[in-house]
Image (cartoon, rainbow, N blue to C red; front, side, top):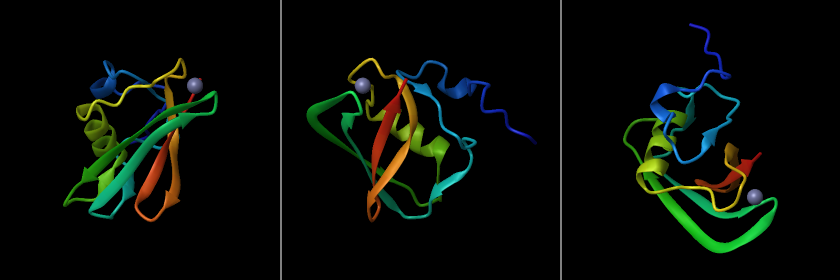
Amino acid sequence: MELDNEEPDPEFEDAPFTLSLDQPMDTVFSREPVLYIIHDRCFCCEIGVKKIYTIQSRRPITYRLLIRQLIRQGLSPLCNHRFLEGFDEISYQTYALFFGS
Ligand SMILES: [Zn+2]
């Protein structure tokens, strides 16, 4: 099945941010059992507060599982850039969220 990324995923319609990832949601993001997702800045600003989300899974972590966990843990954008565009790998098992407009 061809996945169209322009089509919003119904599971995340009510998410507090808009998904703008260039990967289908069921793509495996990582096979590590634990990931640390850091939210501490946007290109427009230094947020000043560093939030770290811990994602654990016994299964490979897909984008869907990752986003689901982040929403469950309360992730929301801290400025007007509400499009989650990706994850920058900053060290082993550790990624920084990248929001844009
Ligand atoms: Zn911003």
